[in-house]
Image (cartoon, rainbow, N blue to C red; front, side, top):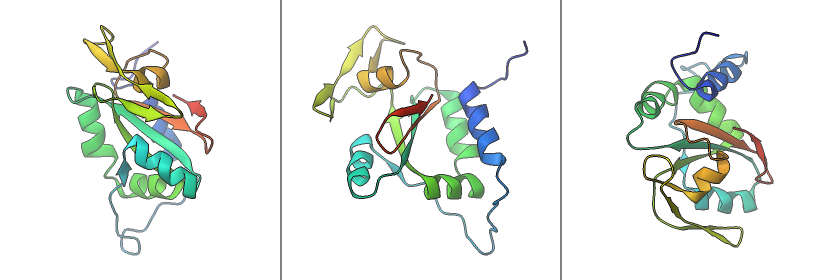
Amino acid sequence: MKRFPWPPMATLLLCVLLSSSDWPNDAVNPPQEIEWLTWTEAISKMEEEPRKLLVDVYTEWCGYCKQMDRNVFPDAWVTQYVRDNFYAVKLDAENPEPLVYDNHTFRWLENQGRGGVHELAFALLDGSLRYPSMVYLDEDQKRISI
């Protein structure tokens, strides 16, 4: 089977996004940036207004992650679709800072991936550390897909 030069989830995201017929008219709807939230900010907003979560799991060294940030996320249609349907979360898989969520403290895991990984990223990706990875969660923070 021929492999795509980028991760399958990025391909899936683009296919899903491009399958809609609701393309925004840039003259009527000027493009805005995606409002990227931290995990904590998104969960806090979920308490006020439940919404699906789009979690972009990335690393600083990942070239494909930078390409997504530069070429996909700024697209007017992608931006509008994400803003209308999700709380968008950027999760650095190699951030060593602890994160408290649902009465559990997620910490840095040594010797995973390139030397370490954040426990939340590891859990969301089921230990499959490929970047970028998009994780979709429903309004109850249950995983829809990776």
